[in-house]
Length: 231
Image (tube, rainbow, N blue to C red; front, side, top):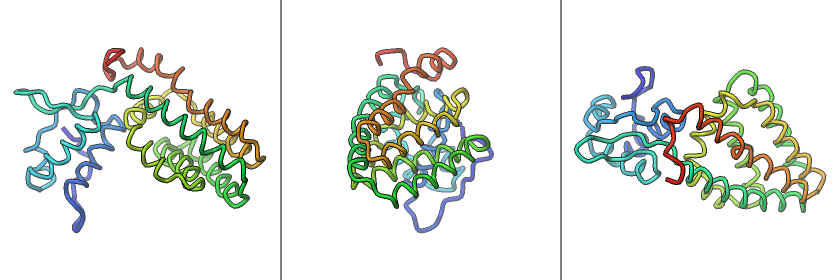
């Protein structure tokens, strides 16, 4: 069931189903609803003071994203993290973002580089104090790159694919230094500012491949969070 500290007030005027989907999605990605957690339509409807229909709509969308599974006669549960989905998302993301940074480095924009450096400063501050804020800044950094390259639709595609990858990112923050991630972001910005497409591509590929080395250790530490390999 939901953590007691979670706000359950639905904002007026916005679709209820979309709000519930967003709330539950964030809880699952942050691992506040860990794999195996059972969710009840009736209990959630009562908790949010809504009908069961928007809860059902949220469940359907979360199931389509691979975050929930319905077990006949047993209920609806948070799914384990699919290692295959994580690796597929990383593969697609690397391919897209490598081209994005190459495009930016081919025609460096001083205004963009300045904006990115301001973001890097915020990342450095958050890296030692606030993991949630750091992840939000990390998302902003990569989205800014995509938007600047005119690839907002490509970023929307990445966002739809990387939900399982994001769950791993929250687990990895417990052991992976955010300062190192900021240093990797700095290398990307430096290459773009220097007008060096090869260096920019190398930097972003190295950055996004960190999960390849992290995943086995995270799986060993939290095997109950993951599907068996190959699933």
